[in-house]
Length: 183
Image (cartoon, rainbow, N blue to C red; front, side, top):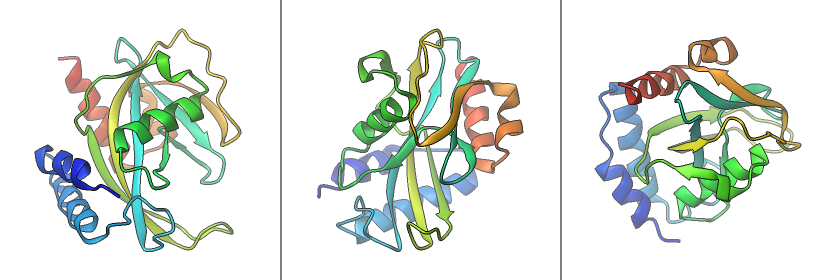
């Protein structure tokens, strides 16, 4: 598996958030140490790809209520061996939203955010770490959202209400970054 594309993206990525900068360094180290970092069978952890999906006005974000995790989250998921993490984020967004990939706009090929989080043990998997690489995407919020069976619900959430759905530090950071886009 070719890791250099992701390593290059991580080297280029700069963030003013200290906690995120530490996660970028830790992710870069993890990727450089594990040739199979994109494989979900790497039980200590693996790279995942997700998307922060905004509407054209950048006033709302796409969130879904994840069935397995019972949390409101942004679209994303396992790379399943695919080292093109941008493609992973696009495919996961299309799959989880039910929107044709041709209707999804990649706003930048650069990383938008990096987060490391623990996935607790379940009947499906042992406890492990996700090294989540996030990209900024845009979808027309007038399109219907069919979703899929991985979620209980899917919808557009106003930026100012994201914390009511999920108040995690990483989502607050994503909201803050989105507000800066509009300046």
